[in-house]
Length: 244
Image (cartoon, rainbow, N blue to C red):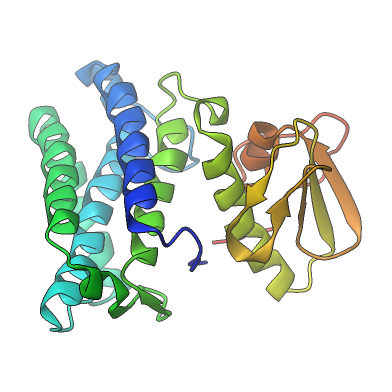
């Protein structure tokens, strides 16, 4: 799911930089031997997580280049091209894989810095075929290192992610669920306020609604872990519906 929320470029870029810093810190904490080990994402090694996040930066940069030049430049030409790119990254030696992550993140940041106000409003297309303003693509980037920093299994949890970002992630997820008619309401016990992606909100009652029906409660961090398929919640054996 791609959200059109969080479209203020300066705020979104700050969010993406913070997410990248969290991921970078957790990556730096891994020795090369541990980098070769499994991640917390079933079926993915840590190397695949790093390669995925690195090449995602390059894909989002293509959208920035599209917005700047007006010349169509899609994130990926196909699923096969995307997967083969990640496969190549997995095979890099540890130093080169770490450098790939650093270099692609820095290059993307520089590409954002080159965009004019008009370019931020230019329309681009996500990998899923959704038409969005270039400004919305920044959140699509920020979401990746926020979530995958946890997948590195190197000390990060969703408690390390700011509540505003957790709200956006949950908003993206609930929007997918709502479109499918899933009757789930998420209630954050630690409250918070502010608009989130996907048309949901975290208000005084700490509620993010996909559709009226089943109610799931927990802290924002617990709900995000559960909703993304990366954790369980006390008091329920309910498995979160798929969202990707």
